[in-house]
Image 1 (tube, rainbow, N blue to C red):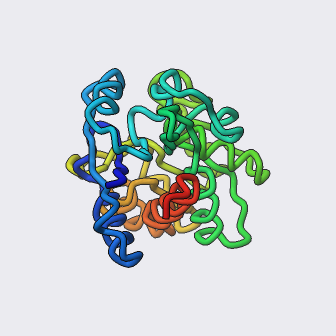
Image 2: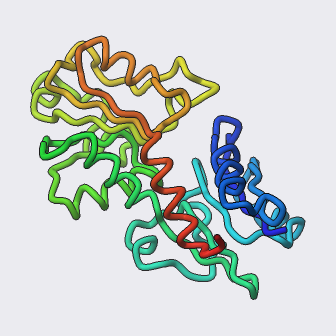
Length: 245
């Protein structure tokens, strides 16, 4: 039985197992392939997981391990090395782990469908692994963007989001886990009273389908987009990386 899975903390919100089980059924390979969710307390638990699951052939990686997993890998694909984050790991037959980033393509496809030909200035909320893939795509596509973070690693802090900044930057992308199930009541602390009908709010979270971030944007008349389309696109790209189907 070829085994695939998702590692992160938490993973209970993830629909990956449901999605891929349906995929295996459609491909008539449920008897030879399975997909499990593996919640790891720390990334150091990866070694124990690999030892206990010798049939693992590939892993998807979610928050908070997209950057932390890199020291455990034998090599990186060019795009993962450039981005500095990994969300897809292929387990080679000799046990080597090769890291890839399929968030890049998934995000780009989703954003293109959301914006069409519009090209507003962008605020990227968060500076973690998912944010790095988003930033790389925005840079390649010629978008002007700034990052926002509590940690001091961003171009702006949340306190810097004045009326002037909010008027200038019309696309706001949440790459943080704030609002992800089971903590649906949380949201990034942007000044929602300054969001207008000219704004676009995009969330990489897909569960719940309407996060508090998006709900508040909708209330102000903004166009909104959740992470469902990105989830599907990056998942399909992962299977092309694995080459197992």
